Amino acid sequence: MVDDYREAYWWLKQNTPEDSRILAWWDYGYQLAGIANRTTVADGNTWNHEHIALLARALTHTEKEGHRVSRHLADYILVWGGGGGDDLAKSPHLARIANSVYRDMCPGDPTCRAFGYIDRYGNPSPMMEASMLYKLHSHKLKPGVEADYTKFRHVFDSKYGKVRIFKILNVSKNSRDFVADPKNRICDVEGGWYCRGQYPPGLANVLKQARTFSQLEDFNKKKTEKEDDEYTKKYFENMADPNKARQEAYSRGYGEKGKGGGPKPKKKTVTRTSTDHKNAKWEDSEYTTVLWELISKKDIETLSALLAQDSNLAHVRSSDGRGPMWWAYEYKSEAAVKVLLKHGVSFKEKDKNGKTPLDLIR
Image 1: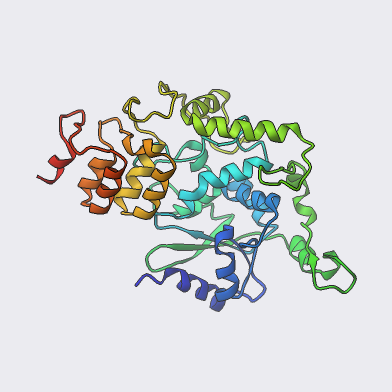
Image 2: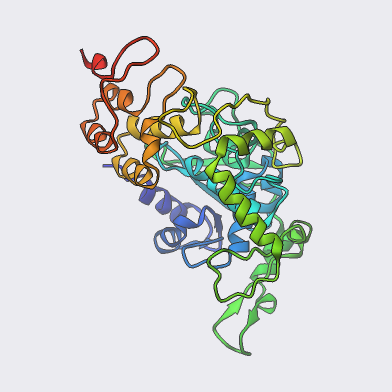
């Protein structure tokens, strides 16, 4: 039985001071509070989009900048690893959330196409590789990847590597004392139980870069910023044509140091300009990477949900001419084969070497 998550929370409860603060993506906040009995930076009830964006910025920005923010917020960082739906798999979405409030993350591209995997083998883009999350997630697991020992100390790995915990070094004592002081909490009424905390002054330079983002679903909020509407429009345009968005992003050079982290990515030649995957050029892309990973790990639930949103993805082909049906046969996933057949994928198509999916089991 995989007991990594409980094991990690129990480790925190038994090995950290009771007043320790844990920085982790908000998904795990309730578990950390309920099992580890530790304060979390965010949880499932954190409705403040700008706060979630600050957390996302710390995780997906450069290691140096991530530490600069986290040392004012927490004492430990908890990361979900081990593949599948871990934090690194989620991280492109985190970068988009960060960019919605901190527009310097991915200038001009709300979908942050320069942050993510660049091929089916899990190789990161320069921007992802430079991020704090990547450094902690892949610390001493991938060749040449190691967290800065002057900023973080690796203190725990769960049995199967599903959870990793790092102690933040050089935590700001001034910020810690500030947030712990009841005088710095804003209560709805004097003596009331509902009291909002305030960010410590040490984060002032970061926070002044933020802009309040009016989300599409904020129906009750009067929209005064035309820029938010334009941002949302650009987001959907880039989602509809991701390769064009990525090419534009690379041409502008975001991903450079100071613009989300990492060196400027090499410019790529992209010829596909539509989402018609049936007739698209065979090439390695983020689509082939995601689908290969889902099928190889036999994550049929996520595969089905993804194809329900865009059935054409079932027909995507990598540079060797193979696609989801080949991978389904390669990994002997009968369930994946059934899902792909429902979306009209044939097992008689041939790859660039003339092999069909059926050939992989002969």
